[in-house]
Image (cartoon, rainbow, N blue to C red; front, side, top):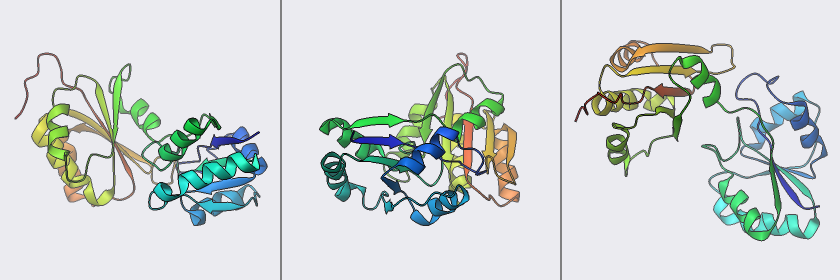
Length: 231
């Protein structure tokens, strides 16, 4: 039966993969990978030799229709993976999933690794309700979104790269306030995993003195009901 299976892959340690995910990758007729070189490392580790094809943000707009047509015509089971974590969560995948749903192809998503969950849990900040923002807009709409988030009561979750971390922390400090509590995790499930907690001003000072390295998850306290806006 034609099917697309979304397969989460480890965000760090290669052992952070489910037995079911390994089985699906071994049984899939085709594996769509964000970067075939990165996925090859995982597949070799688990002795998986299935056919792979690139599917990333630079070609997905042009390829989704053809891929879905192939799945329908061949009746194959196709697995979708990203470099790390769950596809379509700040990674390619949404366009393909949407087209599969539109064309009546069964879509199944396995439970598994997503970087923000462990970062949220260890933050010590409220996690009964939260909002996932992923990467902030790099240019257009960035300031508008920050202004909107200044009054957000839920805990906020952001992804950030090392070369933009300082800029983001400066802007969060400006729009949300220097005393807002924050927890920053980097290199989750890797050798140099680290979580630092404190006020925004404190963590901005820390990463100004210590060059940011690795991929970051920023967990920011929501606005308290009695708190006033800082802009």
